Image 1: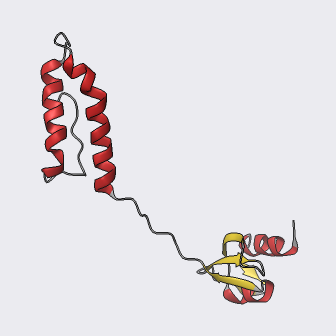
Image 2: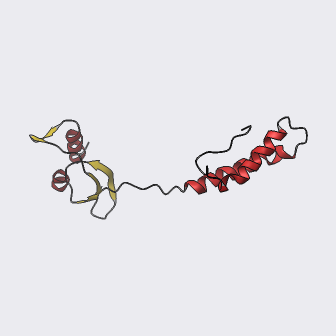
Image 3: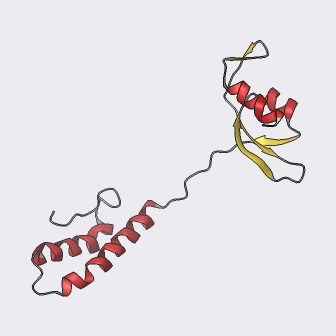
Length: 123
């Protein structure tokens, strides 16, 4: 283990570092001289990072780029595709519930429950 990693491990394993109370409120991205990330996120005091690393920047928590509506529509489209063949079978034992389910799937994006509550087969 290199010196920097050892120091970070020691820093995070006790409540004091070099005789002072540590505050662990900051996260940092460590980079090499070319700007390549060598450690994606360490938690340490700024003074420690500044003393031990030449190239660093504050860590920014990634934000979720998931669009819940788009994800829900993809799920719904998959359910419609999955039930296409069953819907065509006249002798399917659950045909009435399947027809209702498919109608609920098609109407779901225009309801107040979208995208929070998914339709279920037999509901």
